[in-house]
Image (cartoon, rainbow, N blue to C red; front, side, top):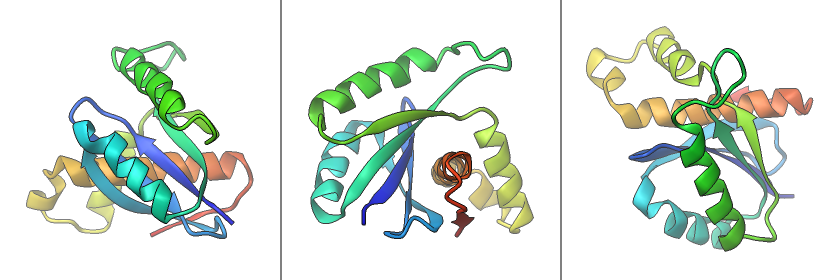
Amino acid sequence: MGRILAIDYGLKRCGLAVTDPLKIIAHALDTIDTKGLMPFLTQYFQQEEVERVIIGLPMNLQNQATHGTPLVQQFLQNFKKQFPSLPVETHDERFTSKMAFKTMLTVGLSKKDRRDKSTVDKISATIILQSYMESQSLNPGII
């Protein structure tokens, strides 16, 4: 059984989250510099069985593209070229950064840790993955 990997794609950094092999729990994986994302994914896919990739798609409240949408769409095209046999989907990522920040407050992270954008990116990717799993009725949990 393969995992589902989620990507919160950004200009500088990308947050990654993944499920366990049984697709029960979504958890943060890492934050990767955007320039190193494709080599990281290539290595990760060689080590782990991934059956699907979910990429957060930025949309505004009117369900229209934002300034970040073309960036994600370009990445999506490049991803499909590099990994043509791996199913990939986009998933609405509205409010994930705000939800990630609230999560950090709730769990009591220090002000210093909350300023770390890589933490926000990982948590955002986890929220995207959890939301995707819930929409597919896969009943996830977050770690």
